Length: 202
Length: 207
Image (cartoon, rainbow over all chains, first blue to last red; front, side, top):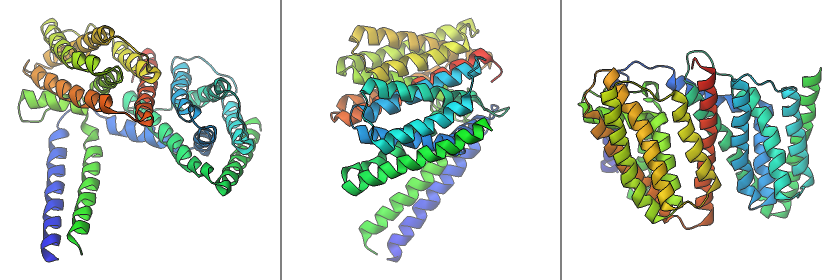
């Protein structure tokens, strides 16, 4: 299949050439820190195990609860997380941030482990409450010289993707073995939360 | 190797390269892009490379699409015309009188309304489109004047606004499955969250 391989190679080289031409054009102006901000924002939520576990637990719990919690929790979380970030940015203090984050892992992990089914309002309130701590702790950690806008975009997108990952994993809830596995995963998150709590208070 | 397999591999390779290309030029995203192809292309590139303009356009299109075809049709023209008119006014005033936090507010309001999926009349959606268009258009026009570029750049900007709103709002209007509308609402919540953080950055200053 030399012909097909040939076509493939030519197309790839054409696309690569186009990419380099575009890069050369687009770098010809002055603002800086945009991409760095985006990548810092994307990396930040996945750089801390406490944040990662809590976000995935939100997705897992949503998957267990089903609609409408399945989508209401991931809608509520980023907005309240941003509110926490806003508080941090304007200098409003929030006591016990690290403890709040640890408690979020404990409570959300326990909710998944117990397969708790509170009313939708309670579930959203719980998630929204803990989201404020995550936002306050992580939303404001922008390195100097980077773009706040692109950092925020990356930060929110990465957090949303972690929720999505939790929801996708939570789809195993359809099978009996999957239900058990999910509850075990919730217990692991809660135990990790206890470790985070210990670290926060000592 | 079968031809279909080869095509799939070509598509995958091309997709991967384009994804890399999409991320790669990001360091350059900024106001008043210089493409070297003239002011119209500079205007087109500006919108596509500037999330502070691109995201509100998409958010407005999502909101219009969620509110039905009538709102989508009105927004298509209202946002484009208002953006252009605001741009011309900003160009001749040569001053960014609008505070930076106002742009963050458009993220917050449009994202919040999209996330909430409130049913709005086409008139209200149109009014929102006019306000958002005038606001961002003004900032674009003033920026063009301040950097001593040509007003023609606004034609490129308005063209992209028209095309993006047409595509995005028509796409959202066409969504039927419940989960697809929910995905749009989740996108709205992300936009609102980004807007809230932007507002914080603006109030804090320095970024």
